[in-house]
Structure formats: C-alpha cells, structure tokens
Image (cartoon, rainbow, N blue to C red):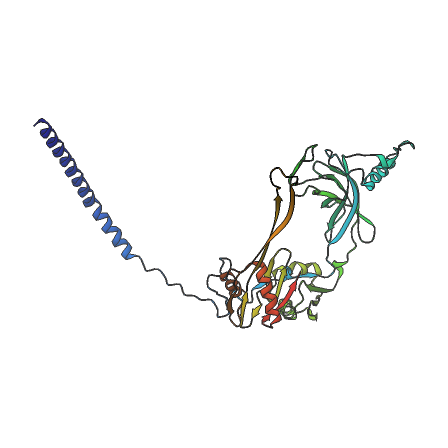
Length: 424
C-alpha cells in the first residue's frame, strides 16, 4: 500500500507541473498575439515589390546556366581604345647582360662550367688581382659563385636614374641562386650600347636544401630570381614623339572593322583633326594646331570603341589547353568520339627447378597487354551554336581536353567549324 500511495503522489505532482506549463504557454501566446497582428497590419500597408522585367537586347547571349557559372555578356562590348591599340614608336626595348653571382652556399657552378671561372678571372684582373702563373685555372673549383644572364625591359620615355626590375637566370649547372648577389653587370641593347647597370641581391620564391649523400628537396625553380629595382638607367633612348604632328595608332590585333570604328570615334571626338585608316591595323591622325601628341596619347583611354570578338580556336596539345573565341560558331554536325586505352603491365616470372635436381633458377620477363576501348556516343551540335553552347554540349557528354582537341580538328576537317583553328 505504501508503494501505491508513493506512486500516486508522484503522478499527481507530475500532472500539476504539466498543467502549470500549459497555462504558462497559453498566457505567452495571448501576450504575443496583438504584436503579431500589428506586424501583419504593417506588412499589409507596404507597397508590393516592383516586377523587374528582362530588358536585355535581343543580341545578348543567354545560354542555360551561363559559362563557368557566370552570366554571359552582351554582343559588341565597348572597350577603351588604349587597351586594344598602341602608338607607333612607343615601345619597350629589351636589355641583356652577363654577370657573376656570388655568395652562394655551395650551390654554384661546378668545375665543368669553364666560363664561370673565366668570369671570375676577368673580374679579378679588373681589380688588379692576378693569380700566379703556376695556378691552372682549369683546376679551380669555386662552388660559391655562378655565371648568370640578366635581362630587363627598358620602358619608353625612361630617363637617366630610373629604376628597373631585372630577371636573373643561371647559365651553368648551379643548383640554386638563393642568397646570392649579382655583381655590377652592364645591360646592353640590340645596338650593343650599355643602357643600364644592375647590381644587388637576388629574390627567389621557394627553397633548396641538399645533403652530402645526394638527397635534396626544393620548392619552385631556384635557378632564376629577380632583383626588384636592381637596375639603374644610364642612357636614354632618343624619342621625338612629343614633336610629331602625325600619329599612327596600331591595333594590337589588326581588324578592319575595329579600325573603321576607331577612326570614326576619333573623328567624332576631334572634328578638326584629319583621321584616316591606313590599313586594317593602322589609324593615322593628323593633329590640329592646338593639340599635341601627348594629349592624344592621354585621350586614348577615354575613347570607347566596339571591339570585335575573336574567331579563333587556340589549342595547345602539350598542356591540353583550349581557348575558343566568342565569335566562333559551328554548323550542324553529329560527333562520336571514343577512347582507346592500352595498358602494358610488365611481369617477371621465376622458374624454379625441382627438389634435389641439378637445375638452376632462372627468370623470364614478360608483359601483359590489355586493351580497353570505350564505346563512343553520338551527340549533335546545333547549327550556329555559339561558344557557350559548344562548351555546355562538350561538358554534358564528359569530354576531356584531349578529346575536345580531336573533336575541334574533326569539325574543321568536316567544314563545320566557322573560325580559325590554331594548334601550338
């Protein structure tokens, strides 16, 4: 009886707590109800959201899903004339020099690189340091230096004292240029004249570590580095651009349509200037009396021209890279392509003689050849398909880069590729 009474008391206590919880929740709902009603009334007073209509022109490219997750742009995009053209005579000049890199940690040229020893001997002679005649230079071994080639680009209108970035590359069998310093090296142009001098420590991204046993570890290329601002301009390139009254604007990619539109934009902006198209890649401008060639150069970035899309398909078979221009289309064609995989697995078989026999154990090399030809499937490219549709079709069937190269070559052979195919 005592047990029953105890259980009854527990049930009654639990019921009372449950009723109290329900009552509390009901009171909370009654408290929140007026606030919710007010919120609904306020929302009802708000104006409906505006309906945004698709106002894209009919010429916009809009494939399903876009390309690479981005929405496609519109045809005939306008770009700055300064990004697709350059002024004739305003160019970069390349400089090159040969020097010596010192301060390496036993990672320089070996004894087999004879010209690095010759570099060292010539440097010592210039400092009036001569080795004894008994010393054989071919037996010298200095692993803390390396012969290097230094290159730089001299920008247009560079003045004496300007700083240039230089690229340093090892010429011999040095393992790493990390921690090295390039001694003063003259940089010459195509005419053989010295235009800059470079000197300073080399900056290399990565590391190299080696042990005496031959083991080594490296990250990135250690045989090439940079010297930021390591060259000083010592001679200027003569340039009379500021005195020119007739300026030629050369397109980076010659196109007669772009040349005509560029000439029209220039004539519209400068109505008193004489603008003509000399050829599909050159626009000639005769400046008015009040205008200078420098002012025209500054205005090129403010002149907008409708650029034409490329009609090229560039393929690199070594890396499997394919770049398709936006103006490339294909005719209606059915394509089937399958993969042929040949696997050769070498095996080494051992022939063991019987027990208590006079035979010897011999080995025999053999190979197991397995051919797996995947079943090709036909898919249809719609007539007049653009770049986005071509990419989506090839991605839908799971085309690999190597297969895509073969498909584009087949489309060109069939006359269904409306564009130029460039294979590198």
